[in-house]
Image (cartoon, rainbow, N blue to C red; front, side, top):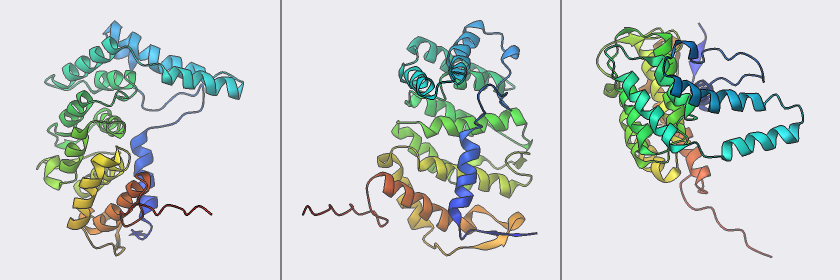
Amino acid sequence: MSKFLFANISIFLAALLCSASGYRAEPGAPIPGEPDLEAVTDERLVAFYVSTVHERRALWEIEDEAARTAAVREFLDTPLPEAEVQYAVQAAHAALDQSTPDWNVYRVAMHATRFGEAGDARFVELARKVFEMPRSGKVSEFETRAIYDTFRILDQSLAPEAADLLWEATRREFWGSEKFTSRMLGETQERVLTHLRANVLGTLTRIPPEHSLPVLEALKEEYPDTTPYEALAHEFIFELGAGPMVDHALRRVYQRAGLDPDGRPEPEEETP
C-alpha cells in the first residue's frame, strides 16, 4: 500500500474541499446524487427548489458565453424570497426532527436556499442539528450527502456562531462515542473522523477571517508541530497530521485577510 504523505497537505485539503463543495456537472448533464424531487410531497418546497435549482441550470444552456454569464450573474444577484427561505428552513427542521430523519427533504430544502446563501444563524442551527445527530453502524448515502451539503452551507455562513460550531467539530468527541462508517466518508472510524475534521478545517478557510482566525490560531497552539507526517493510509489519524493541516489552513486565511504568513499586516508598497 502506498504511503499517505502529508508533506503536500494542500493536495489533501484540496481533495476534501472539492468533495465538500459538491459536484459540478456539464450543462444539461444529470447530476449524480442530487435529491429525489419526486419523493417530496410538499408542493411548495418542490416549487421553490425548481425556481432556484432547475431555473439556474437552464441558464447554462444559453449558447452565447457573454449572455450566459450575464444571465447567471443576474439570477444569483437576485435575492431569494425571504418567505420561501424561511419555509424551507422550517421544512428542513421538520425533516430532521422525524424519528427517522428525512434526509432527502432536508437536502431539497437546503438546495432550494442555495445552500443557505443568506448566511445567517438559522443555517448554523440546522448544521449543528445535522452534525450532532446520533450515528452508529453504516451511515446511508443519503445521510452522507446531507453531511456534505451541510459543509457547503457553513462555507457561506456569515454568522459568528459558525466558527463556534466548527471549533467544536474539530474535537474528536464532538462526533459522538458510537462507531459509524460510510462508503463516502470512510470504511473505518478513524478515516471517517479524519475526513470530517479535515473538512472542518477546509470550511474554516472560507468563512469570514475575523471569525475563523481565532479558531485556527488556537488550533495552531494545540498542534504546533508542522513536520510532515508519513503513515500508511489506513493507519493515519487526524492528530498525526493536524499540525501541517492547521498551518496550511491558517496561511490561507491570513492571505485572505491581507496578512503575511506569520499573521502580520503586509507592508505597504512605497510609492516612488
